[in-house]
Amino acid sequence: MKNTLKKTQTKKTKILLLFSGGLDSRIALKILQKQKAEIELVHFILPFGGGCCNNFSCVFNYTQTQGVKIHVVDLNKSPYFQEYLELVKSPKHGYGTSMNPCRDCKIFMFKQAKKLAEKINADIIATGEVLSQRPMSQLKHQLKLTEKQAGFEILKPLSAKLLKPTSYEEKGIIDRNKLLDLKGRTRKAQIELAKKFKIKFPMPGGGCLLCEKHYSPKLKDLLKNKTIEEIKPEDITLLNLGRHFRKKGRIILGKNQQENKHLEQLNKALNYHIIIPTKIPGPTALYENKQDFKLANELIQAYSNKPELKKKFEKLKIN
Image (cartoon, rainbow, N blue to C red; front, side):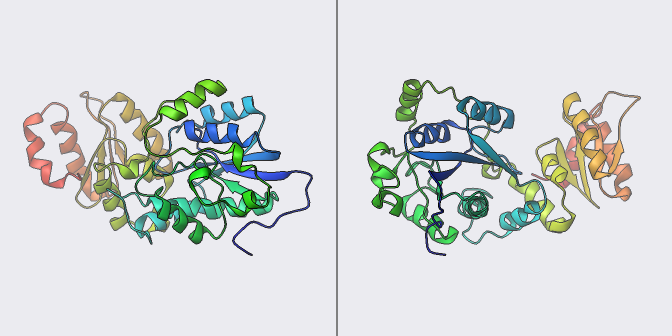
């Protein structure tokens, strides 16, 4: 296969757009709807979050208002989950400021999009990327690297006029005059376009946890002490909850009533040991190794009615 997707004998050119649900991808959809093409979307649900819109209901509801078909690739499920964790553990192109393997993550999603494009007979894969918006993955040379690793041309309608024309544009399949020349981190131009197209869009909502420095120690600890095959999606969810300690195994304390309930729910899948205080108000504790039973009880006391004991456990804290 050449560096483009194979053109199929269809009445219309079909475009598969990677769609996060955020402002850029919504504008990209509007711009592509000006082309004489059929458009379908692919949305990736990532184990660590990412993009402006981490609420799939919001994403799905918007696509329904636009009358476009959306495909969902959930990386929390087999066969993607383990492969994605391997990528996070040992990224070929390295990390950003924390444990964020942005280039490898993007290449992974593009390769999955390519498989889907071939399945649905799409001729072009497009994204809502904006040149120089993200220093880890959207500088010009990084965009070229991503394309090379993915193995096909990628149409970037928001910044196309600042980039070398794709073969789709050169052949007249895509009208380059209807594409944009957005660049940089400011969203001023996008917000103006949103007003013009009457696009409602979500405010940025948390982004990717792999970019958060406070998150990395807990993830490193998990990857060090469990094999990829042993890790469940619920283990990943657990990393963003409670206070984490390690002796024989991990011990997690809820920080409030909501987290306590969440720990109970997660443990239905994890099947760890659990202590739910009944005699005193205090944190629920999940612990992996039964030998940590005594320690888990001591931690519950320290973080409920004996705060003077907290310093005793600082060396066991994962942070």
